[in-house]
Image 1 (cartoon, rainbow, N blue to C red):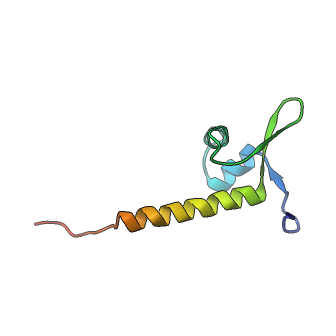
Image 2: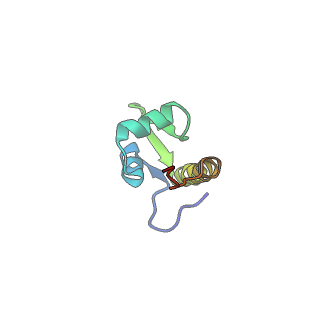
Length: 80
């Protein structure tokens, strides 16, 4: 699957962390748990996440969050 012009196909864990506004350690944990698909390349085993997989992961989180919100509606009713 092609990435839009100017967008790299593969991202480092640091790139992903910046996109998600979280730490590289958190992204590494997501990858190691299998929540975020990634590949390991090169002799030093550097992790790369395909940009489309990151977008799919984000979309999945939106869907999971919407389900959570539906099951746990926020109410500001306070019993007096």
